[in-house]
Every structure is written in structure tokens, then in C-alpha cells.
Length: 199
Image 1 (cartoon, rainbow, N blue to C red):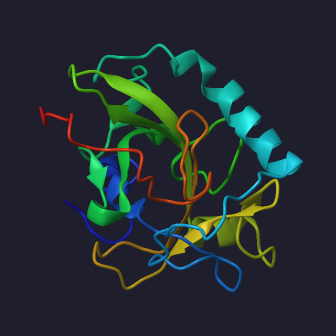
Image 2: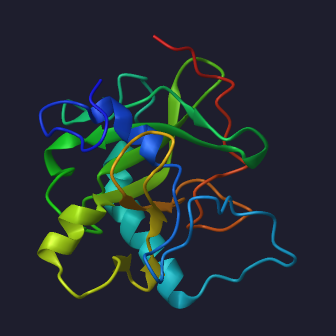
């Protein structure tokens, strides 16, 4: 497999490995931020609620997807089921490869649809993940700083990293699955990979 910069035609299987990050350059969170338990519950702001509703609208058509084959031919399961042990899991990442390297973020068209495996061998939608490589973002958005959607800063996975990949920004939105640690953190302790059987 190619490390470093992912090729447009191949290497999509490595993208889910990258999803473990968090933070902005200057404003982004670090990849070691696992979203630990809060001392008191966070009451979502109207802007946060609006973003969740936007993501739900963008992914509504996948709500009834239960087959591990995923949400359709445009999407590919990129790396089994991503688990963080004590931190919970991110689950299954179905990547829309055609927009991975466009250097843009469109809140109505997330790069990744997130699912969790179910005990009966199926899958259930949990949210979406937006991802953009730092170099591709900066090339198209010079001087703008890190990306954000409706006030939510993306997380930075910097280099060098354990995957040997170029730096990227990512933002998870747990639109269909409650996350007690926050709607926009990477790991969800309510998600488990226990029901996943690698194929």
C-alpha cells in the first residue's frame, strides 16, 4: 500500500486509519484528544443543533441501510471497524472517494458516512465524517486557516504520524448516535466494533 500522500485512484483503504485525528493548525485540536468524559453535560447550542440537522438531512437516505455492503456504489468500506479501546470506537467508514482529493468541504456532501456494526451482522448509521488533506485545503484556501463548519473547527492529524500519511483535517458529526463525550469528538464510547465480522 502506498504511504504518504494517498493516490486518487488508489489508497482509499488507508483513509479510515487517518480518522483518528483531532485539532487545527493553531486552532485545531490535537490527534491525542480522545474526548474524555465531561464533568457536566454540554447543552448543544442552536448552531450545533443546526449542523446536526444539516448532516441528518444530507445522510437521511442512508438511514435504512443495513447491509455491510454499505450505502451504494459511490462508497467503499475503507478499513474494517475502527476501534479506540477504552475510548470507544469510530465504527465503519464508508468513503466517497470521488471527492476525497477536491480540497473542499461541503457540509451537504460528507466524504465519509459512519456506521456501526450490529449483532445480527448488519450495520446502522451513526453519523458522518468530513476529511480534507491539509496541503489540498491550503492550496485552495490560502491564508484562511483550518477548516470549520458552522463554528465547529476540524481536528488536525499532523505528521509525522503512525500511519506515515500527510497531515489531514477531520470532523466527526454524530448525527444519528448519541455521544456522551460530545457531538463532534472523534471517539464515541457508545459505539462498538464487537458485532463486526471482517470479510
